[in-house]
Amino acid sequence: MVVLVLRGVRRTRAHGSSAQSLVEFALIVPVLVLLFLGAVDLTRAFYYYIALDNASRATARVLIDYPAEYDDTSGCTAGHNEGLPYVNVSCASGTLVISPAANANGSPPTREPGRQPLTVTAKTDFTPLTFIIQNFTGNPITIQASTTWLTWY
Image (tube, rainbow, N blue to C red; front, top):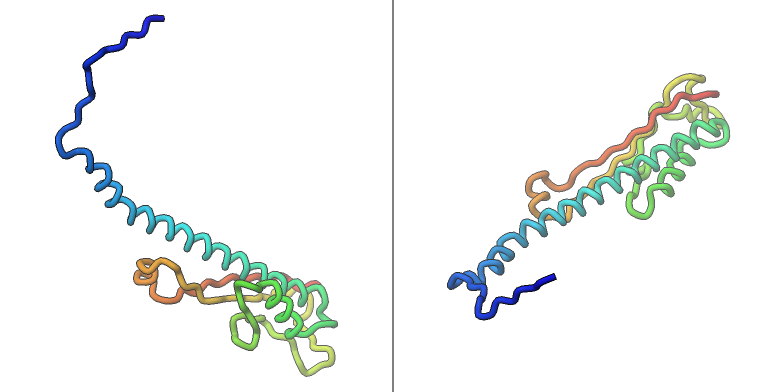
């Protein structure tokens, strides 16, 4: 193998181009930061949706599996505990809605007869971290998840 070494040959740069890459980097950094923060916001919104979906599913599971033992309050407690710590849902605040509600006249409360749909809807407000996304979407964004199961009792 022969390696040629050229002496006296230098790589030359055009005058004034040494800072060009620094200027280009300074121009592109804000775009990269906004893309990164947008990805973080999208990830947070997806996480909130999954937490809401789990909360509505836990509420429906309690109300479907134990219709005679538990009323809507117990289902709401199960959904609230499932959504914590990031998503705070409750029946009292209207962020966790059970449809149709149990008939509270009986003891224990009764539900619709079997093979009827029971729908639990959970919702929360989501505030993006990125200020530009806040300006475009309005503050805050409502995220909602719903679970519908057929009763089997």
